[in-house]
Image 1: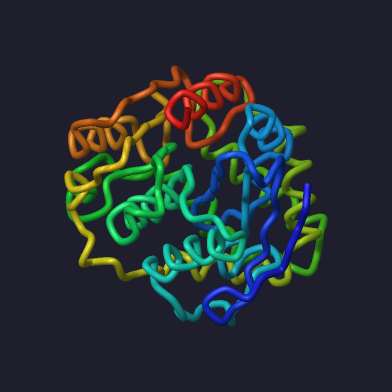
Image 2: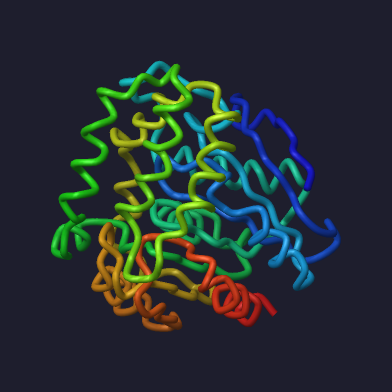
Length: 279
């Protein structure tokens, strides 16, 4: 594992890489309000072990990347797509396999439309259609919104409050598979220890932009893999089906009982599926 701070689009972006730089590159793009830590290190190592050069990174307002004052909006989702390409440029990578989780999958869709020559393949995990069609699909479970509402009462300087808040947020996103409490608390500790300013994460709730790419999934020309859990409370399974309908050539892999998460029970299936599409 190799961590690097890079200047990308005039801001600091923290990246970590795994494996041999001469192998085909896989860029992992995490979802909103989630640092690179939630791409579990062991998951990254296993993926790299399949002959892939794996990169994960912190979005703006997360981890060790550039942060802004909480409650402000300083960039768009298109800027986040440009950041992803900037990461590839910083590693001198001309083309990569893109794997996006949740909002990261929407960033991936923009990449496939904005920079099609930079993608070999696109994998969308627990994501949704980017555009107006999303409004017609089942909404996020209220319990998730209720959990985020509690953030105003969190003392962000108190590690003993912060870690349970971060970890328990993933309980709200879990499906019917056993909640991995020990692993989630371990990852929450790592995020809490790495983050410059945790409250800045909520700036992602104000993220806008990308309207020029709305409802254009049918124009995506690279091979696409959709991976979606049947018990996703944040973006219910209908969102995965909508993606499949919007990208006719896409392949859909269903994870029975999985929520809005990358559950360790699914790692083998996810890595195998990504391996197949990227071979």
